[in-house]
Image (cartoon, rainbow, N blue to C red; front, side):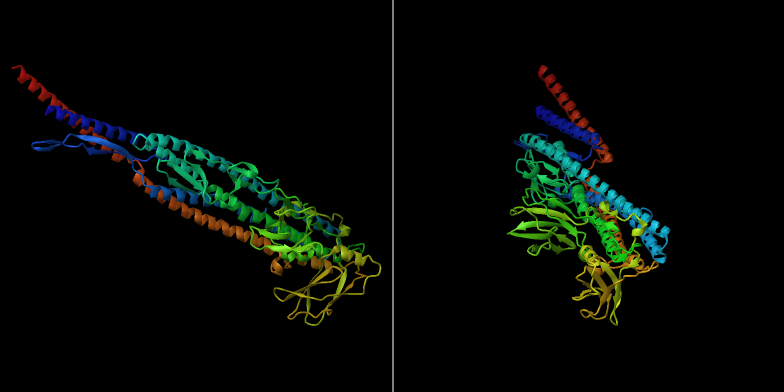
Length: 623
């Protein structure tokens, strides 16, 4: 009997010792990130049958189990992904918002000062001081465009750098998870869960979820598969498949590839969502690219709009005005593997109102060149049989050379316009403040603008020596707010206001052969460029476009801030829920120490009793 009692006492000592070890392990890891509280699970040993019934044989430690819930961990991971996504967007968008809306460094003060100088020229076109100030303010405006573009470019560089480092972080966590899978599979082969290894693996997945949205599945052998995007397995068992960040061609956006490096990898850039990487990619596309494109569109609008009007005037020598600004050309990038020659693309002065802030891809498909937005939503087949094609505010020439199926070019109409804008006229005598043309308007028709949209044709007409007596206009196109637009054969565009469409030939324009030294009519028209609806089909002025950009970025900033605050609360709740289940409570562990200590002492006392019984039996046997 005493031998059975000794076994029971020994089992109690062992169970209490294991419980004390587990409690001490919990206390030691109270500050370990990702650690899950552990608990020994005990069970009674199989009883032994006797004539008096089944007699207990003590206790066994069945396992050491971690306090863990897969649903709670998944919620924490998802909230971590969302929180990092919105925090990343908030931080960067707020910088862009502060830059564009800055009352001193933003574009609005520069625009106002430039057009104020234009108005002063109109007030006194004979003043050399006014002419000098206008040129100086134009150069300051160009410098401001370059400054803002460079700051946005700096943010792009930072974003690309963080995308690259984020990809490296994901690869590092994937490698760690794959190695842990191998260790866990080997450990679970012994029949018990390796709790600390499981915690480390869950923590690695949680750290990865800060960079990208992840999904996991547990295999029968205990290994974990980790997927991103639309099922790309970055970890399958003990094998990790890396991501890479590279540019397909010089100047092209940074792309994230899955699997093999370079062109052999699968482009998963558009499949990445959530986390810091998802936030950076979304920020780059919807904020930085759009802001840079819109800033460039305003620059092109000023250059083309001011040029068109300036070329409709005469300078102090009586010569037609030249191009006041240079008009930056759209950027054209050659797609990987493309055989055709790069097409010539320029801004269409006549189609300025159709210019957008989008990027385009020109692709050779089914023996046709197709122009589509990026991302593709509105494909348009271009017919080059009649020469260059007018499309989306651009003049596009047919790509040369032998085109092959799939050849493509990325066209960015305004991406670099703010950086490449320049002032062409630096001599004050070349400022064209006098009107070169005199309109004759029919009844109930008022003139909004009279500009030169084809300077080559117009200049040839002026210098022909025998220009026609007058220009006539027909085929008026309707614009918003009761406006009508038409272009003459001489390259002159008129925008008139009328309740009804003007009749063909009713509106006439004659060349002004004797403007006089104080003629300021073109100077007044130049001052009106600021408020003229050049963009968005005639709906938006230059200031409207820039203010719209500030409004969009400001709205996104506010949305990102609200979303970040909301996700921070949800993440705090998810962490609290995990801590309530898996976290180490020192008060509870202190109570457990006392409980298991007493259990250990009680089992030791049973052994002491067993020893007394043995001594008694031995004493009886000696008698």
